[in-house]
Image (cartoon, rainbow, N blue to C red; front, side):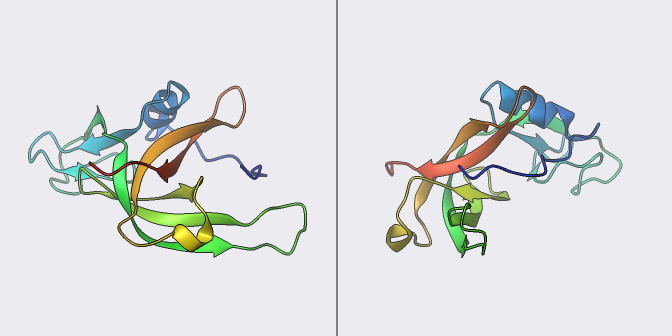
Length: 133
């Protein structure tokens, strides 16, 4: 994976997500009142704004919605794929996709989460192709 020059921001709201990522788990938030999921991490539920969302482990499985191949001018950086992925839980996440040739990328491609250790404190979720059910 191409190295990052700026690590992700880890704040009080997102801390449980990053802690779980270090352990190889992908968490999303669920509204305790409606049971509906949300992504990205927030201090309040988007479904019941007065409720504080709870963290739950997601399946880590989803499908590719759309993507872009990023080609940078710096020759030391390989092209990489940024994508929107719809998880089985119904939320859409933005992440990198690895392990698939550009010619094989397509909407609906089944994906599963994997993790890259960036440093001692940060593991970054990425998605790779999986065998469909």
